[in-house]
Image (cartoon, rainbow over all chains, first blue to last red):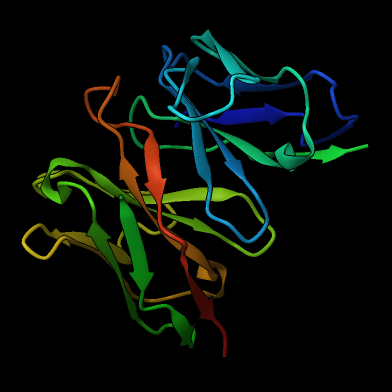
Length: 107
Length: 124
């Protein structure tokens, strides 16, 4: 099975900082990659599909890139409401594995 | 408005069984693949199972294969997860999730809507 490895597992940044999370697949998955945001006690919220396409209504400070095995998720200017855990997920085929998550906090 | 409402969670002893349900509304249920995803306390997301729109294809995580069964009733707009031989490590919030319809692979898609989840606790 293809493994999804996210890094870092957590980060702390200041409001307005640029934040980058990486997600690596153990084998190529084309661009069948999604990103989700989860706040404590809430279900995940869908943000990005096809590695770089923003879901409607998602703020433009969020972006994604990559293809094959290496992917990046970026928050261009961190806001207090962005405090959450972010997950990548492969959806080329089952198992639809998630990365282990990246917890983003405000410094 | 798309809504997914899970029910059926609760406390069960190891070796016991439980059936989860997910009531869907606000979209054409029969047109979408559906999934169950779980999250153990303080842990990350774990995909559990998928079912195609017409129930032709079902997939399971290795951790639940042979113990859990996914099903759906398109006439009732409902998704189910039958869980047998439950283990302590199955303790988690179980989410129902709808697969999207744009830029999907030939077999799978991202999860564009999620329910609020139902808690399953397996403990003696």
